[in-house]
Image (tube, rainbow, N blue to C red; front, side, top):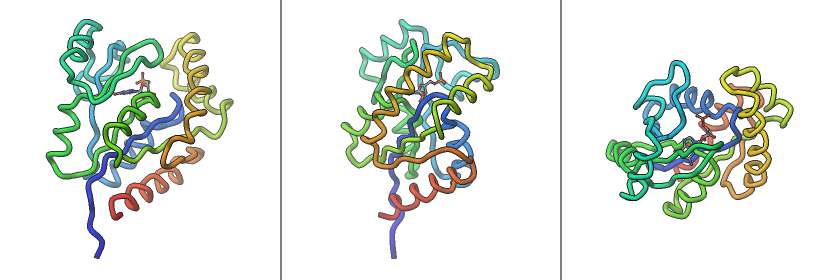
Length: 189
Ligand code: 5GP
């Protein structure tokens, strides 16, 4: 009989590829899958809650934590700092269940170096045109932020080949089933 082994899954992809919605749906269907809350120097958006959406830190506080080695990985993304706290990874692993990190490509490659057994999953939008439409439709970003996110998307897409798995998020239900199949396959391996 195959055994379930807790794994570290890392999901990345361009801003607007639908990672957040996809991961939230996958976690509803696989409730034991833990999520690490990241830290960021970005200002909270309307409705975001400190300690739930992110730990919102000042640039000084973020730097203090970098210097104190409190991050598994961190990176500059779209003009702000984002990072995964060691304490968040520990908190989840102590529960004995798999953990999912939703982080950018620079962070994902740092995680793979530290944890070679981690599974990198890249979420692709159907096209760059579709990505732009989603970012505009989201209504949370300024035109400058959208332009920056689109420019960064090109660089991120070029790194997809360094990932263990690539999923196209065309239809949420199909992508969610695909993500759960990948998680299941690695947990049983
Ligand atoms: P947003 O500002 O839209 O919440 O996130 C912007 C980007 O930051 C996303 O692509 C997301 O994957 C990335 N991000 C979020 N948390 C982390 C983290 O802890 N580390 C890294 N490296 N990137 C992160």
